[in-house]
Length: 469
Image (cartoon, rainbow, N blue to C red; front, side, top):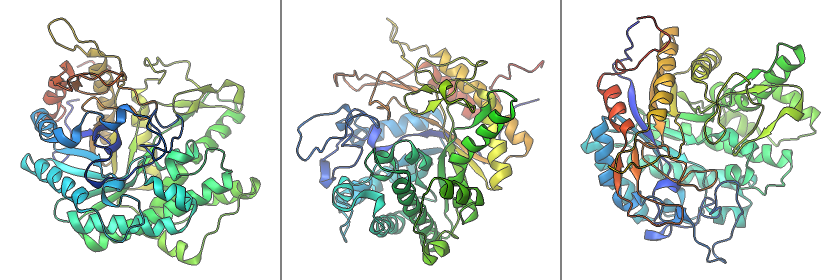
């Protein structure tokens, strides 16, 4: 079978403000929750108003000042789409202001204008693992219903400002991560109870739906989606207990998509809340708000895992506790490599939600080595992405509607989990060391030219290694 993607398929990459921009206190920007986890999502929480600690994220790769160079490199690869996020604290530094910060708004105007020069479509995330730190200390984060109002004011502001420049939006990045890291997800203490976390998540789900409604009103020709961490699990064995445990494990993250695509809480969550003595305050107005559902479902996919009734088999990962699959190899960071999993996940989500899908994160983190001649031969990344994209094409042939694919970290950036720069994802190498030294010079890797050819051929240069053709 000849591999060819749909003619309107969007090709590109994905970045996040707090992992690339730097300039963390420039032009009126306030402190975000990300600024206050200087060693990564799972590191210590530091009040940086009271502490002079520095972080590699403070400068990151200096995209804030170097974006014209980076956008030009993305254009050279042939990008038709770039997923990025707006830093909420650049627009409302504390989060509860009534008037936005003009310098913050002007930065994203310049960025979107630069992308428009190359016909690169923006896909913009409203909140990517960060929120104003002030809203956490003064209001209790998303545990406080009032934060819904602050978020929708922010969303309304950027929708009105960029309505002629941005037609694809996402609400919250990997919204299901709140269950695993409540400070990052919803601005709560890590020892919060399940009831507190689910109440905060409920507020976030209501805010997401309100943003969807606002987007449809302000930008009628726009599309707005949600974003899930696609943590798909297979049964470890055909033992009925393992199959049922896996079913419940998948419910744990599919629940978010169920609410955001159907407009109401699924019945299985009622039993879960009852059996865990979780009482959520859901008003009649909340139920009405939730009826504003997303236009498409986006997700990240890096790995699969297994489900089992035996909790002793779980292993601690750098993001999730997972049961490894004995049939799969793993990356340097222990993330199991499963290209077929993305086809399975695409089919699962499309059959469940009946909405167009968008793969907005996928990639391989690795310790790239610069050769004496300056080249970076990242064949392992090429193999990883080739095999995943072949399976994406298979899903499209299965009948799944896939809008596009934005690989994670098309340029080296600061990893979210541990604020590492040694864990590189990019097609573009950035001269930056973990101690913050380095020229920040950009340099294409071998994968840069590989991805360029994939995009130019609309997938025809991909190699289906299982095919006899």
